[in-house]
Image (cartoon, rainbow, N blue to C red):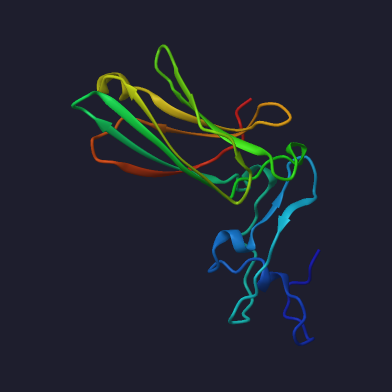
Length: 191
């Protein structure tokens, strides 16, 4: 419990200023908790340069609403050769269970949900705040077949065994020859 009123002591620590300055980039003030414990897995703070107080009324994240990170992908359909090009770019602000260790190896598994699903997987990278994959996957599939399916991404740890720690998906209805970039919010894996 913290007293959120302005402190009478000059220079004293004020949680409403340091942790919840909404003008700062999210990774500078985000505090992550593992869903199985109340121990912070990474903590950082930044003081508000104005020194003003922030209301905490709008910040009521429960364990189920916490940020699991985002996945950045690019999509393009080359109609002349009937190919879909899928590029997995970055995974940012990813959180994982403490049971996976400090810096687990992370990979992205992709699935095109066709009647006969198409699977692909990125190489495994060391887990950190910004994991760069930069890997492109190309499949020859007719556009009509793709427009009725979803592209599902499963974020997985590799050690000690394969475990899905988050997932996100994207409908391919508006797939076109113009390359499109998408930032997908990662959710907890479905049961």
